[in-house]
Length: 313
Image (cartoon, rainbow, N blue to C red; front, side, top):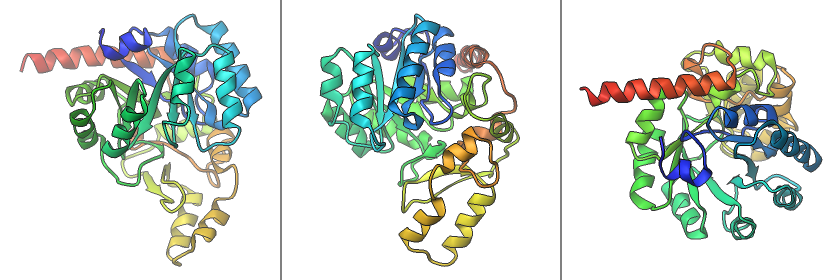
């Protein structure tokens, strides 16, 4: 399955595990990399010293390539970048910020840089900034999302039409058939988040994982556009948000309700009532918790079977 992305990252399969906050520690990243994909440590929920620990443990757990996802709106960003450089990490996915800020600095140290976008406009800006590839993430995705509500099925071909660098599809992909569909639309690889939340190695709370596998169609919604759009499971906290919206709140009211550490409370600590439970729409197709290696194996096997079925139509 060699193509531009497998060659760029030196991996077996064009399958990337998303660097999700409170879910993507060294255990998950190393397991995905050992299975032939690209594992990603999610730095967004880590203090610098915690990220350092995860990088070093991941380096001991795998001799395969792995990366770090860095949301650029988070604090301690300069210290995080320096740790990544000092520890010899070779792949960085940046998001939630200007790709020009750190791309050239990282590349000068031999680091491959990928930027996550939700629109054609920002894909072009990323290409102009010199990134090595982009992740185009559709509206179906969990967690923080784009404001334009462009779905993966329409976003990928529109981005493909405009850029020359490798393209990774994300949002609503959890199966081999979804992987094939994204690549037929023009993606060189896929980035998978929600499916790996429901893995044995995910660092999220077991109660959250169980809620994900019990989710049905319509159980997630994107909200809080005034702050930072986020897709989450409907729970008491979500209903509190809806009640506040009914009162035509000011931005300050939403900030007060959100408070601090909602995502940690929900996904990491397992508070299913008051926590922010970030997950994608594809959760309705996730029915079990598996080892990450089994998820990779199942997706690749289904991808190959679906490809043969399409070829024989």
